[in-house]
Image (cartoon, rainbow, N blue to C red; front, side, top):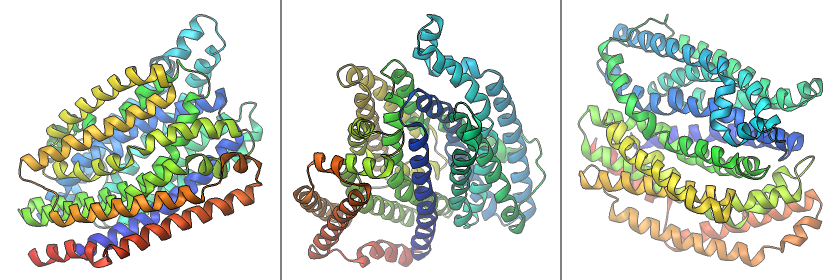
Length: 526
C-alpha cells in the first residue's frame, strides 16, 4: 500500500503540475489582457462565485462525504449495487445542482449585490464603481453554468479516484486553462470588453471537462443512467455526511468570499492583487497539498473500513511528512521571492510594475499560511474517511469566525494585505484544531521520527532562505532588467535555494528512505 500511495501521489502531482503550469500561462494571458483594472476585478469576482459553489458541490464537501461511502459500497464486492449507488447519487446531485444553476443565472444581479456590496451601494448612489456591479451581474450569467458542468466533473473524478484511476481527474483541469487561454487570444478581439471572452472561456472549459471524462467512466464500467434516489440508504448517508461538510471543507472558500466582500469597499485593484497573489499560492498548494489529499482519502477510507488503526495513523504520518518537506520551503520561497516571481510571470501588457509590487505584499501574507492550508488537506481526511463530518465543520466554523474577526481587525490598518493575513491566520487555527482533536481521540499523533524530520526540514529551510537573501539583487535592478534577465536571475535564485535546501537535508542525514520508512512500516503492518 505504501508504494502504491507514493506512486499515486507522484502521478497526481505530475498531472497537477501540468495543470498548474498551464494555469500560470492562463494567468499571464489574463494579466496581459486586463492587468488590475476594474474589468479584471469584475472577472475574478464573477469567476469566484461558481468556483466557491464548485467546492461545495464537487471537489469539497461532496467528495469528502461521497468517497468514504463509495469505498464502503465498493468493498462489498457487489458491482450492480455499486452502479445503482452511482446512478442514484448522480441523479440526485444532478437535479439539485441544475436547480441551483438556474436560480444562479436568473438571480445573478442579486448575487452581484450580495457579494459585491460595495459596488452595489455605489451603483445605487450613481458612483463610478456602479459600472462594476452591472458588469458583474452580466458576467455571472455566463460563468455560473460552469457550476453545473464542474459538479458532474467532480462526481466522475471522485468515482475514478476511488477506483485508483487518479490521472484522469488530475489532468482534467488542464482543459479549462486551455479553453480560457484560447478564448483570451481568439475571442477577446470580438468584444468591446475583453473580460467577456474570459467569461465564455470559463463556460466552454466546464463543458469540455465534462465531456472529457465520460469515455473513462464507460471504460471503467460505471457510466450509468442517472436516477433520483433521495431516500436510498447510501445516498441518505452521503447527504447526512455532506450537510455539515459544506462548511467544514469549504472554510477557506467562504473566507475568500468574505475577503471579496470587504475588498469591494477598498480601492480599485484590491481584488486583482489578492487574485494574482492567491494564484501563485495555489500553485504549490495544488501541486503538493491537494495532490496528497486526493490519494490519501480513499486509502484512509479503506483503512477505516478494514479496522486497521495502525495503518491509518501511519498513512496520516506519511501525509504530514510529504506536505511538510514540500510546503515549508515553498512557503519560504514565495515569501522571499514574491515580487520577482510576479514580475517575471505577469509584467507585460496591462500588468504594471506597480501591480506586481502591490500583489507581492498580499502574496507574502498568504505564504505564511501555506503549510497550514496543506496540513488541513491532510488532517481533514482523517475525519471524513471515518465518516465524521461534524467535527471538522465545528472547527471550520470556529476558523471562519476567527477569519472574520481577523479581517475586521487587520483590514483597517493594512487594507487588502490585512485580508490575506487574516486568511493565513484562520488556516493555522483550523489546522491546529483538527490536529488537537485527532490527537486527543487517539486517532493520530505525530511520531517522534516525523518531529525530528520536521526539525531537519526547518533547519534546511533557514539555510535556504539565508542563501537566497544573500544573492538576491535589489528590487530597483529587477525593474531595470529586461524580461530575459529577470527570468535568468529568478531561475538562478531558485536553483541556489533548492541546492542549499537539499544539500543541508543530506548533511543532516535525511534520505529517501526516511519517507519510505513510514511506508515500509505500513507495509509490514498490512
